[in-house]
Length: 77
Image (cartoon, rainbow, N blue to C red; front, side, top):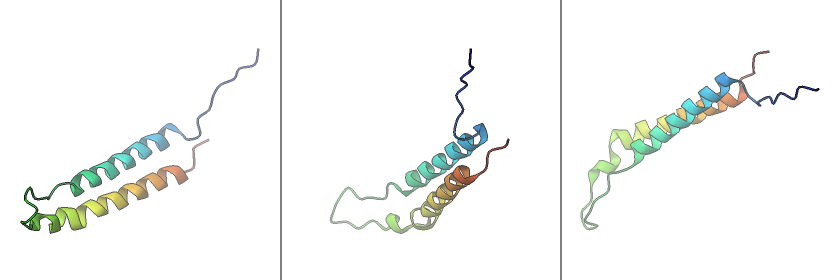
């Protein structure tokens, strides 16, 4: 009988790095949320703080870089 072992496209390490990258992207979007005002006539300055303007987009870009790295990383043979 022929042994049909299914092989994955990536190694286990690639999938772990990919999940870490997706987690960093999700964390970046969570850091971006909030800062709104309940009253539409009142302007809230919290929307322009460091976390939403610098940190969160940087986290998202780093997460995209990690996921691209996990896709391009060569599997060990």
